[in-house]
Length: 512
Image 1 (tube, one colour):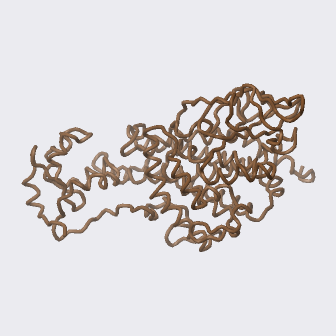
Image 2 (cartoon, rainbow, N blue to C red):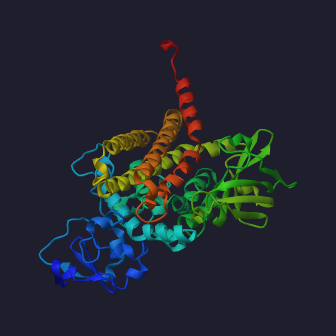
């Protein structure tokens, strides 16, 4: 049973070598910690902190997770008092307004979600908080790739499988939350994507099988049966890793400009590949690469390349961490069996474009969730930070900023859910015809919203919004990395233009 103290007793311990503090009715003996305090000794020996109730001062400077970190300093509680702060527990929904999508907010309703969606969300949040979050924070610090054992655990629980969307690869599987694989739809996938984005570490998010999500579908949809049997099981199990290798130094969104060349040997049994690729997600630690190659004049072909002699990868340092394994890849006379051709020779553009809708939709899911998390952290800060003797949220200009941010994050989620619902009702051909433009505009709008939110959150957080770690660490990371979604998978300008061109094609002459 916890030892009980009176506030008067705590006040006696207010000097160097004998220092206690109170945080939300819990008493901490920080006597030996004073010299180790990252903020310096003065912060704890200040007359308004040492021997005093430091609750307001603490939450004005720290996240609640810090309390869990220093549980060893707890010596008791204040008698006959109860805590006022509700500290988040792993797996729980946030109680902060607008912190969760509407369908998860208490008292709100949605026509899109059923019990299976809620069961999956609960299972995914528990998995994320227990397994993914600790690894994400550790890998962001040491710049290493996501822990392979975690990826394999995701394979064992079929999370890797679910990230590839609905399909026959899920039939017969019992998914987290007790979901039958054949009942899995795009709303289930959106839940998986958004829950796995909650750690807020953008580099780690790409490192955690981002390459698989875009690199394996060409094999699943266009590979030979032999390739499928060999590659798909080992990648989904987390025993091998794969990347999509399209972008080059001279060709990004304009895939028709690729310069990597593949030529057949005289006997026609192999491809010889020469060239380079750049900004390839997971490329540095991948075993396989789905590579876009030029195989003749105006001919593009997709070829699965194994990491063999002649394949060299080098890490690219970017605004987010090297845990993503972003790489520069060179192919020097790499010999590949013709059987590794994905789809028909010369049909590479169709193979490349086939997964763009799904890739962009996934990025919209993650960007939307990342923005919501940044706004949540900022809203919490605005309530605990005191300026001019009042909480920051008391300033009308700050409330104006939040009003706009709330509107934008709700609009992006509503747009996302509308498009997702259409995906559940359309086959692939219909999606390509009717949704390519919508998904392009959706992604661009989500990333522009993220950019606006990043700017506003930094302004609200001040110096903490540009400082790594601690109270504003989530905002600093968000503002530094949110541009990745605005560029990868098609730049905002390209996608808005795509949406307009799609609309122009369907513009009836009778309307003119």
